[in-house]
Amino acid sequence: MVTLHGYILRELLKTLGLTLAALTVLFTMGGGLYNVIRYEGVSAADVLSFIPLLLPIVLTLTLPIAALFAATMVYGRLAADNELVACRAAGINIHRLFGSTVLLSAFVSLFMLLMGNFVIPRFIGQISDFARTNLRDLVAQHLQREGFINYRQKSSGAEFTLTADRVQRATDAALRTAGFEVGPGLHYLVITDPTFLNIDTQGKLVRFAAARYGVCQFDTRTTPVKVMLEVSEGRLFDPGRDQAYVGQQAIGPLTIPTEAPPQLSWADLRDLLRWRAALWDAPKLRGQVQEFLGTLTVQHFYTYCAAQLKNGGELTLLDERARPHKIQCDAVRLDRKGLTLTGGRVAVGPKDQGLPTRYEAEQIELKAKPLPSGECLIEFNLVRTPAHDVLEYDPRGGRYGEPRRKPTLSLDGLELPREVVAEAGHYTTPQLLDPAVPLPEPDRETLNDKRLSLQKAMAILGRQITANIHFRLGYVASALVTVLMGAALGVIFRGSRALAAFALAMIPLFGVMILLVLGRQLGEDVRTTEIGPLVTWGGLSAVLLADLLILRIGVRR
Image 1 (cartoon, rainbow, N blue to C red):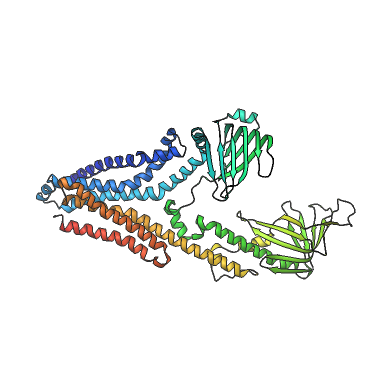
Image 2: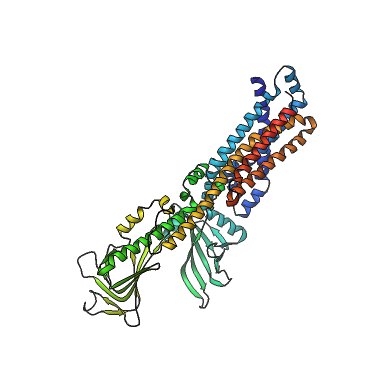
């Protein structure tokens, strides 16, 4: 039996290798990939370094088809050459010979599991890095071939067009001599006779520049990539202004995203399992959770300030230069928009023991805004009213007792008190999302609405993650049932009808793929969440049952 299994498995692997090589070449080098890469501005030399990153994706898609074809052809030939009849005459159970097919399908499933869930996600990141680090070369090749390049920002809708007569690279020594920063992650293009056109979303001119020379800088040290154009001996045209002749002018920077947005379909399986256990760690929700925490911190800050200023108290805040800002007021009003101080007084003292700069205003507005970085932007707006100006007592100008009258004045750059940061830090992420945990006043209603919206987004993402996990595991398991059916049909439709057997075996394969997609869609829908996994695994179970029936009825032992 070991000899027979080795013989069959060797034939399976031989046919699998030839079929897989043919399908891989057909999918990768059949013209489509080369034309797409050429259209995007990648040279033929770059294809050699780019294709290895795409091969795992192509292999994962073509391997199930190649394994199905190999099983159908090999077992069809065994039946056509009466080798199975000889084995049956020798008293060998024919069904045991299908163990080689089971080993092949297990290998295919394991390969699909490793490649599709662990290797390919890492290669997707490498493809993004390839686009980011080679952006200068892509732009240079496109300018040399087409003479222009056009880019539209998705965030603002603005459109930018750059033309060039000739482009070339510059040496580091020449760049240093010209005063440009040189280092890892900085790439430059020297452009002859460049023109730069910027139009808004309505098609109106924002800026047009034409120059004799230009240097385009690509800063890949940051994400997204920043692009700066510096022109020499140029003319600038701005709407409503006369053209201006400039010796040297910097345009930009423009931010160009080179990373693909996070997709669950390309995420690592380990990340999906981790995100399903802690949804707030998923990239799609991390920013929303941070924003909600920032809003909660702002409310704690308002409550803290109101408590300090109550009954003639004093509030002390430090700015980014560690200068104390001491605030007092006659009355304080706290609402969802912030704090409003009546009869406010602010003393901005130096870090040493010198005299502070004092401000007085009939009305002071204290506002805080959370930033994406997790910090808060805090500022005081000293408002001039019809009856009272803003008064400034500066110890460095004139007599200290004589005020200067000013219009509305803003004091910013203030930092959160340590007590507020510590109080907000007591909340863990599960507590933030727990409806049983009370939220602070005065804007509790808005915070509850934000938390409810975040919970809905988490529920949607949770269904998507679960549906994707079932889809991936179902796709891996599909090889276990479809390849076995191909082998059984190859025995039944032996001889010249082997291709008909392969075509017939493709029907359950495509049927399983359709059910997998349908199961994922049903699992993502809140109304059919529970039905999705049943469709996914029910379809696979139905194909497995069909395999057993075909082996039982169509293949005699």
